[in-house]
Length: 299
Image (cartoon, rainbow, N blue to C red; front, side):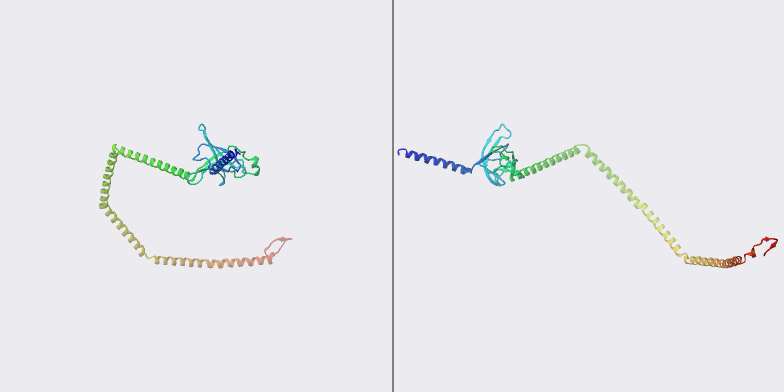
């Protein structure tokens, strides 16, 4: 019985150590009673990913990030170890994606399964435990907005730079015009054009005062002559002329009728005589045939 107290102290210490281990893993989100499979992935930048971060498949938590190892001599310096439930078989083509878990910027791992995979790819045909999965990074909402905002800011800065360059060019051009002879020559040209306009205006005014009245008078005279011609045409006895023409046409028609009537009568008589002659010839042909047969003649 002298060892009973030591045994009790040992058992109590073992229970405390177990409870401490269980509680520590529980606080980290590790269920020590659930068997798991481990997988790995490498990233060039973690974007704030920490250990004990959640691992999801289509929004369902299936594991967590166990450890993060780094080797700065490599481009993909960070190796991330994750553990997921043992009853989950990952098909070939599964990708380990690092993405923003929430608006506050926390990071998590999303196991992206291929869109189409058959049951033969599960189990032995799937990804073996302990394998390295291909990785990718999905920017969060705030990062996307920040990237778009920075892109717009860069465009605005470039526009401002172009505007400033254009203003500088304009100022330099104006300075060259003012300092050189271009402005002086331009003013001289403006003076010459103004003098030419003054001369043209004077000539136009003179023409309006001297030549325009004569042109208007000539136009009035031409219009008066035209009115006289129109009046003379109206006063002509057109109706009498037309009446005389109608009378002449009637006389010609009468003459033609007088000539035509006797001629038609003569033609009709001739046709009647010819018809009678033909009928008599058919009826008495011997009257019109004269021939000699044994010295006799028939009429």
